[in-house]
Image 1 (spheres, one colour):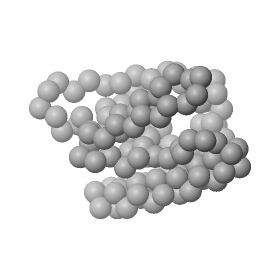
Image 2 (cartoon, helix red, strand yellow):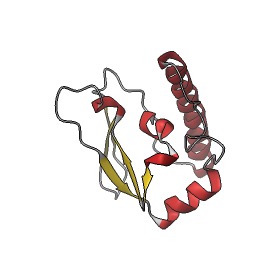
Image 3 (cartoon, rainbow, N blue to C red):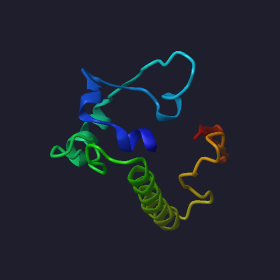
Image 4 (tube, rainbow, N blue to C red):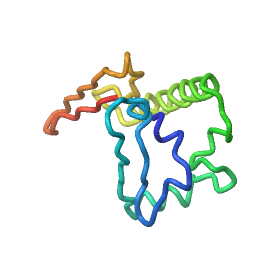
Length: 124
């Protein structure tokens, strides 16, 4: 979620997002950029919800943001997203709980098992 909130329009190069993950920025190892393709569906979402008046794609941050304002914004976006996921689960009567998990020391893993579906692992 942190990488998504910090994603800028300048991170779009051609048909890819190119960025360095926040949790690996300060590592002592060689830092590699990640290039993630932008599918037509993702492009449609960018066109629909992207904030063209902000340097940040989702428009949650302002240039020169502080670490504390970033953490506060991240917490607020997670809370709102989890409220929306809870609503979707209730409306669809899902048997699994969907939510964004706040990483614990950047090492928390989530495992969701769904009937007749492969197990989904998400490293936060």
